[in-house]
Structures are given as C-alpha cells and as structure tokens.
Image (cartoon, rainbow, N blue to C red):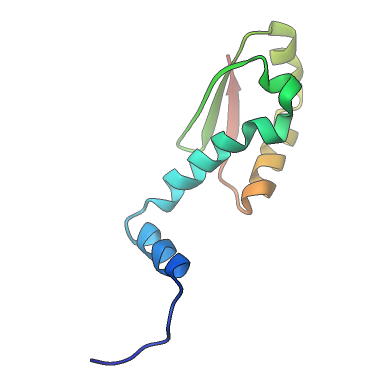
Length: 96
C-alpha cells in the first residue's frame, strides 16, 4: 500500500462532496441560510419562505413595497450572497 500526503477530515469531506456532485447543493443550502444575515432582520421579518434551485434563489415576501425595493437592488443582493460564499452560486433572485 502506497502512502500519500496526509489529508484533514475537512479535505476528505470536500473531496467526497465534489466527487458525488453534492457541493453545489450544499452551497445552495448555505446561500439560503445566509439570507437573514445578508438582508438583515428587518427585511427577514417579511420573508415568508426562501429556497434555491439551480442557482436561482426564490424568496416569498409578505410586503409588496419591500418586494419592489428588493427587485431594484437584486444585483447587489446577489453580489453580497456570492461574496459571502466565496464563489458564484446565485445567478438570479426571483421575488414573490
């Protein structure tokens, strides 16, 4: 048996996730979990549901004026989420 360079548990888990194509799904889940942190508790209070599928975040809001305001600032919110994740995960946001 040939010895190789030692890896940490975190590196082994990351390699496994990439191998099984689960890293994208995990990043999408992280993006959804970051929503309250990115937009703040004031906006999060009006968030009914949120989910990410295929790089598109879907956010249902209970306030129409807030929805319009977020639609105008959509690109900035996408940029903040992707910066927090360290790579481009979110390509678009749809507000309901």
